[in-house]
Image 1: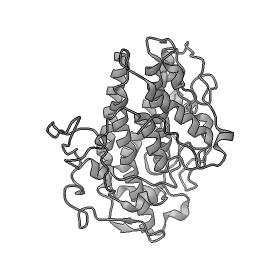
Image 2: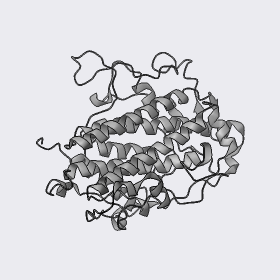
Image 3: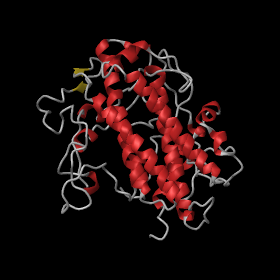
Length: 391
């Protein structure tokens, strides 16, 4: 994936309405302790002095002096990761409102008993897992933004783009959203990618879909309204879609942290990325296991098929549902023996690859041109970062 890819919205007249990200004034004076997770929740995730979205333009990043001991590249990587965590949090919050545990740790929503029961078919502890994943994402962007502010640097802030409607089903908050969980096209190639012993996406290899129908259409991962709660096979298909989408989201986080860690300079920033990244991997393995429990069915309302992954034409090591640890595969060079690894971890264009992937899977359907301009600039700045001393 190259850095010159620009992701645009489906809205016409992109050029007339695009927002250029303003390079916000780097501000200090606020302690990290004042920016706890709960303060983020109370303030609606607003940090900084009124900027809609902030980033460092790639063509200026290397020309600017370091702030707070961080290079501009380090700041750009932290800011991009914070923005991605904000987007993840928005999606997970919607899942938690309807299918997770609502408490003071993750407030909002009142739950939907029918949807929660459908998720429980995948695992009886799904509500707890959804809750804990949601809380983790809150803490990730909360910490990253607080760390940037502690260095006198501008944090990520996407609040201007909270404009999309969410679910109208019982249990959901009626507030504007950043992400769209009602027209998803989940990519399930991660299923076969992590089971392959001979291929690696860092070598340009591609992988078949575990659930081909998902990527070919637009399907809800949450009930859009109470009308989606019946028939039973339909709400179960929605829960199955969520189960595969959970793993899809977290495998992206699993890769992006090691990919961008290769570009940071400051040892403390490297420590941050190497500490947060493995939690994303823990999430991914959990959700990969639960997705394997999705019951085979055909949604009677739209024909979406969830196959039995343990039966022909599926089955075998590439599909068996109890194979949840990465198979060893090629790494760095085919001359080396296979190794069990995270994949991909290619660093070139890694941030833009994440943006393109999430866009292609429908997570941002309905977003504004300004949103895509903002996300592109944050990604470009992160991809332009270079480890100090290396070009």
